[in-house]
Length: 334
Image (spheres, helix red, strand yellow):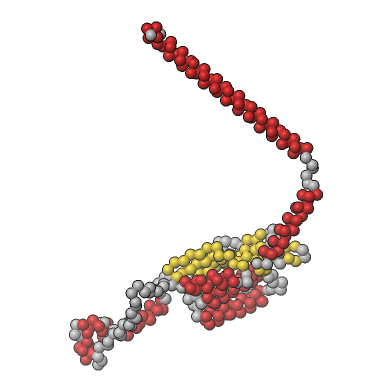
């Protein structure tokens, strides 16, 4: 023990050396095992590579037949899916005069249908996004067919709204056609009409804003689902409707003025302070009695009371149509 105490540093260093030597032996053994595993894996991969290189040349008859069967199955699926989409019609003989006639007759029809359905339109001369076209005397010939297609889409969208009997149509927007319609136009969207040249599908974006109740909104969505064309509801924004109709406020003000007492004093206020007879005697008439408040039907305990508020709905809708095939080639949307 005295020798260990005298050579303590030497003993500690010897112990550390033994521990390090044992660790080095263990690491060497583990590295040797890892090397053997990596060698076995490399040999396995080499065998797989040799099998791929020496196998029969691809493609073979079985693979070709399988590819033909898959191609036929995909073609059948595409044909079945195309039946869900409508085809847009391309007007062959359309000039400025015929388009103007079509535009005015369509707008007149929509105005008449709106009146029959009790749907309010914004303003006295709502043009259904075709205000600029009604003002222009001559339109570029290459824009007549796209405008006619959009006119047909707007007509169908409005008919869906009229069938649902929404309270009012607040606005319509469509994609621009040609260079005469800028994005600053309130009737024009920033989105453009897009075309998928592979399948010949054209996507026409629209935005419609209207005021309704929840039941009418449900009818509008159901109308889009059951329509002949394929409508894709991209966005929907629902918020409480704004202030009441200004004309209603004016009528309310006029009614209040008609029952006001002389000098602009409210009849109830004059009667409260004993001035009803005084004003009545001076102006030759008695005090006007305020109309009684309508009676409220009593409700049972815990009975829910429905007090639904009108909604302002803004829908972003895309109409997807397929171009009809002609002479073995697919037409492209303009």
